[in-house]
Amino acid sequence: MSDFDLVIRADRVLIGGRWRGHAIGVKDGVITRIGPRHAEWSAREIVSIPSDQVLIPGVVDTHVHVNEPGRTSWEGFASATRAAAAGGVTTIIDMPLNSIPPTTTVEALEAKRSVAASQASVDVGFWGGAIPASLGALRPLHDEGVFGFKAFLSPSGVDEFPHLSAAQLREALAETGQFGGVVIIHAEDPDRLEPFSGGRYYEDFLASRPDASETSAIATIISALRATGGRAHILHLSSAKALNAIRGAKAEGLHLTVETCPHYLVLDAGTIDDGATQFKCCPPVRDSANREALWDALLDGTIDFVASDHSPATAELKLDGDFGRAWGGISGLQVMLAAIANGAREREIPLATALSWLTEKPAAFAGLENKGTIREGARADLVAFAPDRAWTVDPSALEHRNPVSAFGGRTLTGQAVHTWVGGKQAHPHIDEEPPPGTLLRRSTVAPEHPALT
Ligand SMILES: [Zn+2]
Image 1: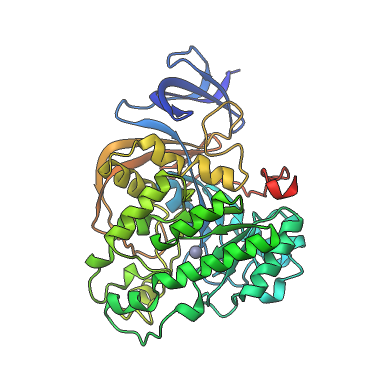
Image 2: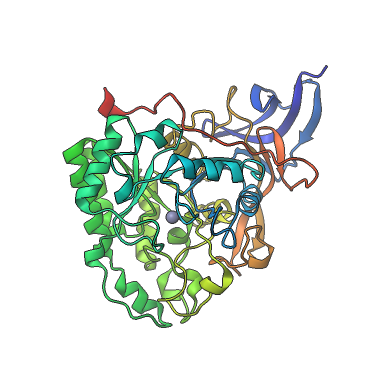
């Protein structure tokens, strides 16, 4: 009888923001003991991490579009969760669109769960959707364990997920506020979007989705929070021009959190070639000064964390070459950890700081208290990461379904080598085993929520 199912020894383990040598003892999927590097424990499997690798908590990605059922040719649970594991992501929370049906009813949530369960290489949770037809009826999905409700303020890109007006957003915030829920919002104001007739020029596409569309939508969200006392989260912030308003809202004590994405932190509008529609997303990638202001806002806490907004489509839809017709979404799930580690290195930001934006902070946002951290009692979601290993992104070698990447050809320093989900190997993938991921429900213990006290 062994003490543990798995023991991992490493010279550098990230615990509480600091690096130390430790042995990690795992039993029944949970870290049950943390001891000295050479602790004499028995285990069914003992892994010693090479000295060029560090042991970190698995990444928690709260913004992933899996698209199954209904648009599985764009992305499915098997391919998405394999991409996640390969990139050091051990938890994803799936968006309520672009699957068919969208996750706006309990029946649709059950359909998602039943197709995801047997295919999940990493842990999977689900967001619900707030569309005009679901207002007033959000509570049943909350009770079924969704993590919150996604809403758009501008057209979503798919007909079956219509957007909310400003008045309807207030309704959604008031309704979810009654049960301690959160509304997560695509913040572009349709009245500030400019007409765009398509074409091959990125600058024309960018001009059609100006900073003002984001700043206006964010002003709408802030005033709705003030009016309702609800809880809101701004998805995929692109425009740094909104940062001052966000700082003000947070200082005022409104319940507002914000994410940005690896593409906004890495790419630069000034280097996007004509017809290069792999870079199309909404809101758009802006210029390099804007990008640097987003890094600064992560460092000062105005932006809370980073999520991938992994939003694939078929290669045919994505690589159309016309910025009007091409699908607007970037597949960053497998690349996010490396891209952020690489970007932090370029800016001399400590790796531990950058990792907090990918692990403990998104976990806390989602109320996943036993994730995003290495401590006794936490789920054994662990990644052996080689911080100094450089690799070049080859879209055809990534695990997600369609071989398209806005990061293709980019050399990144930092690579996930080995990923465990609940103490079971998720990457490199073992085909014979059932995949190790489980389905998650929102914690029944609500995250700290000042509006309720
Ligand atoms: Zn999204």
